[in-house]
Image (cartoon, rainbow, N blue to C red):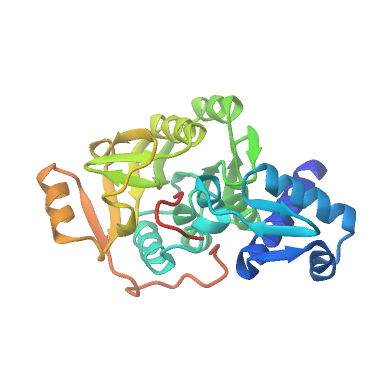
Length: 281
């Protein structure tokens, strides 16, 4: 347990450092020592880890931001994109759940916005590979929390790999709530293969699959194919979806629900906040 807590604390600090660098465009090591009240050695370790993930570029005495594909999948970036729409989608999805359900939650920032709603629904069993979601749900008196193991990936603040997929194979649940990076035509895509594998394993163990995808993700693509939208029982998006895309989905027989931003949303602002054009999920 001590190791899990340490990993969580380190991941949270590195995420905060990355947010600081993104906000300012660059940072000196001495600035980070003062800002986060940590040693210079700790700062250097954190910066080396972030640079190894392709999220920042090391320069003499400090770091600068690095905008590339790996950075765009970072949980820090994803959480700042289309937050108004994502909150509406999360609120709509929460209204479909009932106390007593077993729910699978993926690592997406859209699904992560459901955690506050879960704490108000009542008794729920929540299965997730997201460390951030698990931390937010851990104190819920009516939440039976099942964390999936695996290899921790700081970019997503979540666990992946063989252990994660094998753990899912031993479980059964009622509802899956998940998101993806992109919708091209009537097919869902994601740029990371390890994320695809975890999502597919989640889809196999549930009775009901609900896809949460904001309108900005339509008519774009990513590297890896996940599944046709017809594999989902419901697709929830926001009212920014164009009439042409909406007609295409309806013609294909896709069950579609439109969430209106501001309609019945009670989620507070302590949820995660990310963004670029083709982002994560």
